[in-house]
Image 1 (tube, rainbow, N blue to C red):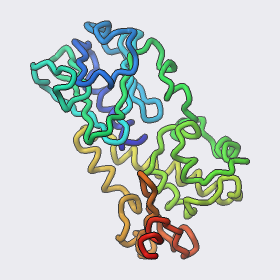
Image 2 (image 1 turned 90 degrees about the horizontal axis):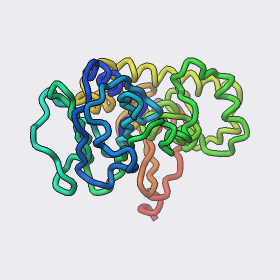
Image 3 (image 1 turned 90 degrees about the vertical axis):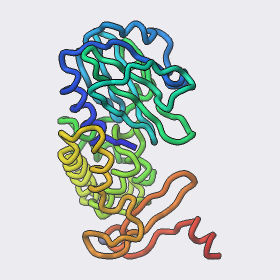
Length: 286
Ligand SMILES: [Zn+2]
């Protein structure tokens, strides 16, 4: 899933490519992709693109007061074409979820792999009409996101810090991959309770959050859409690297599995050398 750094890079990429262009048409490959019905997709036709913005993991393409907003979800992606195919996509007959055609013949497709279709698009007059945007917490890359503000958010939250970092209502833009990376950089257990972190740990977590995301934004910036997935994978130190050596201490990267996700961490760096319980693993070993 693209998270803040990749979505930011997509936004920067689109800003550069769509400058001065107008929307010629928005075609849907599946009716369920579009979560709004008014304004209709046809109302975007002919409108010049006036802005591109990121809200958490949402991309917002503005055309004279109307917003085409989309969220790529777990298996969605944006595929840019300098010359978009002339064929019109039709609901139910295409692996493409949404196609946006631009005035110089270029444009992009939103695609989604797998059978669970979660990719969502909205056409609204105000991005805050999108429920997922309305409930977003602060953006960790915003200039006014301070350590004191972050500490105040954590205070009294008797929630595991891993889950909290991924919660879009708590913090906008961080998902499963970067939360693993941030916690590894901060040398904190994913299961530590947010409310139990001391000042020094909050400081480490804040610094790791800002540095990890800023580094990933730098690494992703300027890359074409098609290269972002590989760039993200290449930058990961523990996420998705179970069984490989930790680049900091050389211990093996471990994993905890849940019903539909998993987390990776280094026991030496993060949990005082003690492996975390993995219910799936203990079931297998019983
Ligand atoms: Zn380590």
